Amino acid sequence: GQQVMQIPQYQHVQEGEDFTTYCNSSTTLSNIQWYKQRPGGHPVFLIQLVKSGEVKKQKRLTFQFGEAKKNSSLHITATQTTDVGTYFCAGGLDQGGKLIFGQGTELSVKP
Amino acid sequence: DGGITQSPKYLFRKEGQNVTLSCEQNLNHDAMYWYRQDPGQGLRLIYYSQIVNDFQKGDIAEGYSVSREKKESFPLTVTSAQKNPTAFYLCASSILAAAYNEQFFGPGTRLTVL
Image 1 (tube, chains in turn red, purple):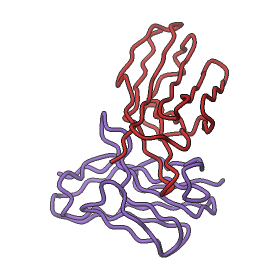
Image 2: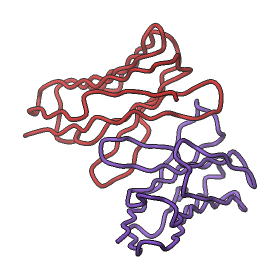
Image 3: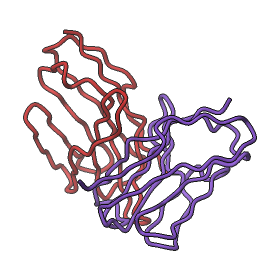
């Protein structure tokens, strides 16, 4: 079936370093959403990208959607301890209305 | 306050017993979802419902059952046929069952089968 692969699975950084997580799909996506799950919490919606090549920013977070709408990335500039958590991408398919979640990238930040 | 509630937060059951997880939302959303989360595997869709009295199997429906008799409620039953039921279960809802709609998640239920 359709899959969305996300790498890396874990990332440990020093506070102030940058962080990037990548998602790749075997099929063209209609859209991609990003969620953040804090330790012990539940996923919370961050943003949605719909257009080919789209780039969106939220303060230190930059989200990109690939030209072919098969890949996406989330980049955090100058990480802070509040960025700790697991980041999930979720790809949408035109048919069915479902989201396919990536495996998630767990980010830890050492102060 | 609008939101999704799941109860209980932690649940322990003996092997061979069926168990039902509760999910209630007061967001007036049509679509509701059940996901299972295991370490390193992300969120996997168990069942989803686009509207009352209708639901579809997700990617890992075997050993699970659901009902959607009311718009606000979407309970999940983990049956004894589920081979590896210990996991973190998340319920979510969205305005409509379209991939463009943001999903709102409940706090989750951590089920441990002994």
